Figure 1 (tube, rainbow, N blue to C red):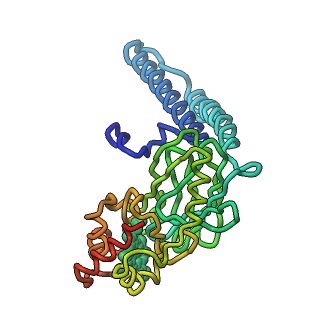
Figure 2 (cartoon, rainbow, N blue to C red):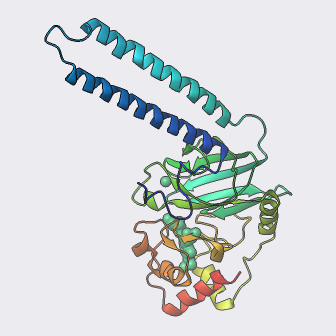
Length: 309
Ligand code: HEC
Ligand SMILES: [Cu+2]
């Protein structure tokens, strides 16, 4: 458990970097402390019973045991949890207007994020979520196919992504940095490889980034050979234009991405070439059609085209 808690970027609910996550971590620690206390008291009582045994009738009557263990203790424990739970839960609700709203669409097995720039234009990123620090952000979660669950352990709780329904969760990051998000509801064979990278920026940097992305129309830029191959084999599902929604993940700013295949492999130039022709071996069953028949020159041209930003 300790080893799994390390690593970059943080995926630990016990190292909170957001308001909701801090509340959740607090309740967790209180529960752990209360459980430990209860265990010590019960062990002490047990030892006491063993070593102080007398020959006469022992212990309280069965009725007293049932009353204490079945009524009084559960009432006290549940009441205490309820009070903490309601207080913390209340603070996590999306009350009032949020500064930023991001629409999330879960797909088998990748994530699409949609922002609005200052002109109200939609901007899309894939497998990479950008947030401003210190601001209330509403995440509105939907699904394109089956039920998934949106979860960034360092920032807050989970919320289900259900087809035909928009669920809302409020996050307020308290630290800048990179965190890992993960699908938290089994959604098929590649459920474990449905991660996303969360980048929390200073507020101005966040708005600058979204504004910059709005200006990125690269659908017709880049080296000719790669562009032609892209238009022939890939464009039906992918776009390099951040203001366009597509079947597959948006591929604008691809070199900046941390992973390929939603956490399958790290994003290196070697892995990009391997992904283009061999993604079905890297992430079997993923929804991108097999391209293993592409020749090396075409793969190279495509990779160059995607790397050219
Ligand atoms: C029928 C739709 C479709 C076509 C055509 C297609 N892709 Fe994909 N592509 C996808 C889907 C869906 C994913 C997400 C797979 C996953 O991670 O589960 C994807 C993922 C990718 C990724 C990884 C992106 C990321 O952030 O993880 C790259 C790179 C990529 N495709 C490149 C290409 C290239 C190059 C071509 C053309 C040779 C191509 N794709 C053709 C649907 C398609
Ligand atoms: Cu999922």
